[in-house]
Length: 342
Ligand SMILES: [Zn+2]
Ligand SMILES: [Zn+2]
Image (cartoon, rainbow, N blue to C red; front, top):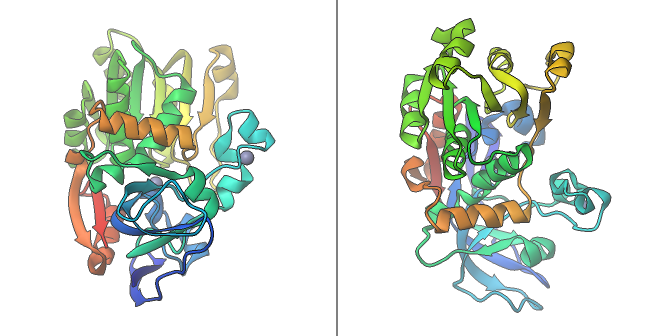
């Protein structure tokens, strides 16, 4: 089978490998759609693990079923998750499934940018979701990224009537916009520095989208104008740029919640105005990854068409052209979602 081996954003090599042998309790999945994630091009995160086969937004068909697996048959259409929690540890027991050590150390073999993946027993037993007939593989590849967004919004308490500001309108920001709208948010506002993405933010359902660079320190004023004179209840930070953090903080109403959906790079601490946040009882929190319940919720949102995702796919590429795809995502200019079809 062919796999794409990542070295860095501009060095991805197609190699030939043996199809992994399937053991007890495992399945083999023929990958049909595999999304390139913003985190795949974060070199500080990925290069230390290279050479590696990336790809964790995967939909495909069951191609082989190992002994001891009763729930799946060859030909079943599925979404596979790379990380699953143990459901037994302290973190799982308290709802922090994505802090679970098992979740952080599980993966499939070799990775989604490959013709086939071997799904180990733990993921086979709790990380495989059945794709309804009318959900395409491509839509299925959004279950993981939307699952992360679901987790963030559930934990941050986005609900009907909330006002939400999404900072950064790449694919994760756009999914945040769509989900907030689906949850009945009162106003959804967005920023970006790229006109192409601002246009997409409006198309995704944002009530207003602001050019963050042009707005600068005037952003809170623009937000008030678009939001009945008020600042916002929630900020979803979907870019790690320090200037974006500052802008987001400046737009928080008292009692609001700020979510680091994307982090600034490690070793770049950000000074938080703690006394101010304390006095106005502002919550700062993070959201990492998705747990099985988040993925199930994401699939349901996609299958019931409450969150539309198919229109976000701007590029479809065969595995041989994956380097082009990484270039598009890394440059973040005129692409939204790039899906590889191995
Ligand atoms: Zn991802
Ligand atoms: Zn656990």
